[in-house]
Image 1 (cartoon, one colour):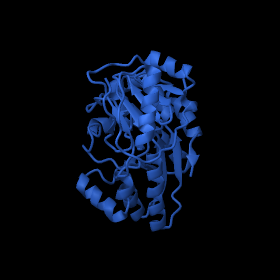
Image 2 (spheres, rainbow over the protein chains, first blue to last red):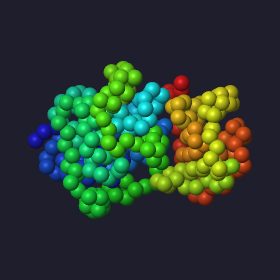
Image 3 (spheres, rainbow over the protein chains, first blue to last red):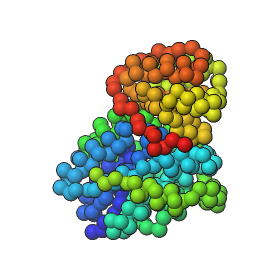
Length: 208
Length: 108
């Protein structure tokens, strides 16, 4: 089986997706993009608690990298079009995950994305976001609907953790783009120093 | 005019919006907050300030107080109101403590 990197948000979907990968026998490394101060402490607390359940269930250490993402958000908000902020944000998340994958000798990336769950989770946005990385991306939940994912989360024991109170991401624009144009995304991204941002974020990542 | 603090959609904090709409001059708000010794992150379309609870101030006038604690939200909003001369007070309606965020590293 392969070694992969799983992006963990603290939400309902990502622990379910991670469970699917572990169940298949893959060796997984978790990455959490720490969005403070645009969120509060709860997403990280939830990820830690999700991993405690999965570590015990599979008797695996499942390393967790916490990558600071708040300063990246500040840079994006100051320099780029807010309308495409979520896509740019996700491009940096994917790139950070890929950097961690290189460090951990992992060969693929994974998320809990499912089509159409939120306005920004469209095919064109997924394409615009993932065009930033080279490693293959596995989305175990892509064809599931919300009820199916919630049922899995309840059986796994992570649903109650995911639904604890918390502050939503404050960097989300009022009207996020639902149909993005990769050319426009790349043009916006030219306004910031991608490599410097990534180097800084990954260098400051903390392993837990 | 800010009338009430309401629990935000994910129940992790309180928010309030001015009625009728009343944008906030973020440059001026940042200046006032920093003059009072408060750490501020300036993200162009919003400020994040470390008062007793961490506060997000949008240029639209929307204010989010990142605490589920009613008393902390009330005190924080009162302090913000004093610092920024925001019109009229608010009452909150939920409880529970929250750690104050350290945001010095993100200061402009």
